[in-house]
Image 1 (cartoon, rainbow, N blue to C red):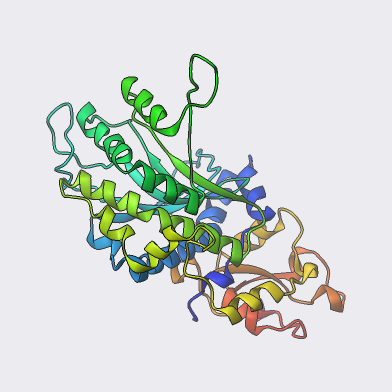
Image 2: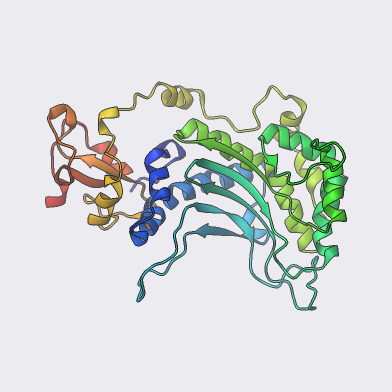
Length: 354
């Protein structure tokens, strides 16, 4: 099977409708895991590839692992009761006692890190999000290392924010005039109140094509030096923040706001995406997509590939609507991205019968 690329990925209102589903929670969870997560994994793989090219860093050699959700058991004895209304993939610190730069209040080794850089799909769209949490038994001094890093590098971090369009979550307002306070004063206020949470995100609403996904990937890559620095600080190492932002490609980004903070798509590839005509007649009626996937066991009926093989699944009209095909279950089949491309709208083969 040909490995799917970022231009094979799209996210639309049907994905949003699945996340809004309130009944049949197991179908919903399967739909997210076997149809949506493979798309998010491709997005993450592209982001990590760009990080290697720009910064020369192999993320997983530096203490990070992939994090993702939903994570439910394949074989269940009891009914699934978790209502997954989101999906995410990203990177976070590995759960091993390597975080020597942090301390727990009970003196035990720190095994869980409080930072992650993710792609999160909600019912509204897709976010690139950096998250932190204070829901860990860390000392105040450990939490403050994040804020001390931000204050020390405030001008550059604000430039990265601007380029990546990653906005901080600002929770509190100035008590005197009810106006949003300057960012550095806001950080100081959080420290004074011992509220050690500061998150950043950028969202693009549905539908998203490859070009819009490219923007979010570049936000992820542009913000990466901040994440990397905090990971190194948590390991008890010196950060290499200045080194990362002084690298040629990133320096060019910082010196020219007119430039996009990204490795752009090749010109011919971008033109191809822009000129692509979406066949609106192939859109499947609301709610049917997931029933088709479930009926076909979330596998391509032609080649048998599934999410475990990295396949992106599509619902295909066996008889195209342009040829009189109906919008009904018997005229739908599940195909992976490769088989779906290979089957033209002139073909009326029911691949389920092979």
